Length: 272
Image 1 (cartoon, one colour):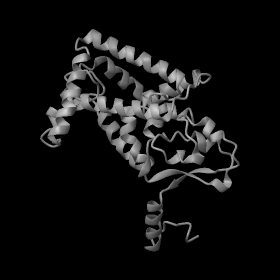
Image 2 (tube, helix red, strand yellow; image 1 turned 120 degrees about the horizontal axis):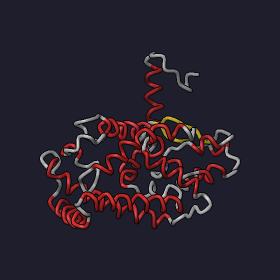
Image 3 (cartoon, rainbow, N blue to C red; image 1 turned 30 degrees about the horizontal axis):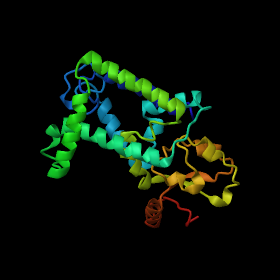
Image 4 (cartoon, rainbow, N blue to C red; image 1 turned 45 degrees about the vertical axis):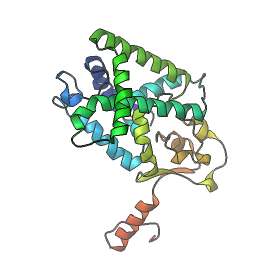
């Protein structure tokens, strides 16, 4: 299962890395529709990779929550690899510090991205004047700090990538805990059709699931329903008593039951 998690990210790492190098904009993957670098594999005018990733982002989110971070995202695979190498350190920052960094990073990244992209989307997605003004001021300030020269931009991205590797070497899945994209998809954990279910009656308190959790969550304390759970399924595989399982939400169970009552052959536990 661990090897399976590296398949899609390994394939996608090539267009991700190439776009980081070739992207002429301060923040990559935002203005791809306006990009003139047709050799970039993330350019929608050249390949459907970016479009497929966006579709997968929302479809997987609605289906299984934040599984995108474990099974699709190349940075997730890189983090997992470096987390294994630095497992002896495994520094655990406080939840308050993580949330503060996550909120700040999301606001700054969203502001800069909005400043870049709003001229393209303003006709279809107008923002309240006060909010738009605040976002633009923050975003414009950030964009003036980011180098615009191509060599300097590449050096900055390389420096940020090395910093990311150092962070995830010290803190397991450190970037996943504060990633703006992860913050955007994390609410799906609360509404996805399938979730991780915990049966306390089957648990023998071995603690193996919480020890193996890449995000430092405890299934016995609601960790499986947390917005931080990346659905890596390590806890499911580790539990020898099947106390943690993949299960449909109650709303989906109700739909299945109705389909069964309509005689469409979808068997349910109530019928059996």
